[in-house]
Length: 491
Image (cartoon, rainbow, N blue to C red; front, side, top):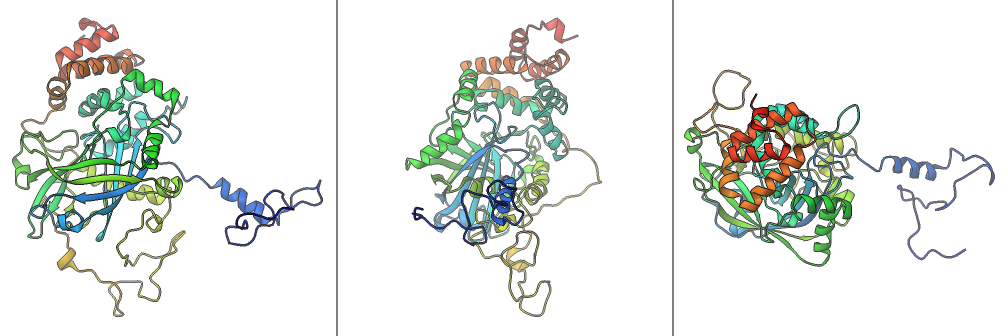
């Protein structure tokens, strides 16, 4: 028998394990005995190694780094970590695809999730978004329907292009985002070579109580690089973990990935009379109206030490906002304030915020108690508020709900009152005609045709009507690529 050269194997309770190799049996040829607690623990733990995968954004990777402010933003927000004299704030950034499962390929056409956790002195601030500045829908009631349309059919368990385009064509508000992801921006070369966006409109509040509407932009300093449709498809076969591998090896080489943090800032009063609803997630704010202003740098420089502990168990929730930052009337954002933490409680457990990757650097003084897997508690202190025995107490003067806005009106079901420039096709048309180059427009046509070719005829015809509304020439080119004449699609 050789002496072990490392530490002694133990059970998860720290007790020395009886054997690494053999089960306890009734004689060498007999059955395994129930009292082999170490075998049972190993099997039971193995059976539970995987928490449920995320319903969306299941496949992804992450890296650690920091945010460093470079400009004075005190005129707009009192958020401490954004102040120029604060120095660096640690961050965790996770990238992901949206529709694919854990084992899916990285380079398929899809939006990319772009989630950041800022470990600030005032508590965790989580910002979730995508590599697109807009989204498919403007009301959270349609979110589960949208995701279902991008997943798998219930009978065959196969993906279905008709299902995807049926939803998109029945929700014209989605066409701005569809146009974006059908360009080569829908197949980024790596996570490092794409921009990120908070996408939603948020509120900033300064020390004087003044309020501003803002949008976050993260511009890659590596430069925007994309795959063509054929290159992305080839990489699916060559290396389905290409993006995950690229980020990991970049950090392992000691290199950094850097984004320039820019803000669009709208005076609070402008929102009421702006020509379209500025809280509609299917639209961008034109930079000619609200140019971006650089406020800092986001730098990634370190890999997680354990993927499961730091990436799979990481939990981002838009409801985590520090003083100086608040929500807006963006209906999708308001829905996500509930949806994200509720998903984490189901997927990871009631006390997911006590996991090291999610635990804030700031002190936690809470009256929440117990629940599965809770290991931090308040000790000998009151478990209710108010109390007479020195338990935690809120400070509304310092940390009240200052990020609010006035609301009025009858209860209705509808996403925003229409304004002069509220339509579902105008901004997508501007993207096609004024932003894309000739070669990018050619790729857009090719990508759409390839994506729509398997779609049922009636859905193709409906979608072509939307493409013509976006841009007549673009619609005709897509129709020609699908072999559909004008007469066919306008009956």
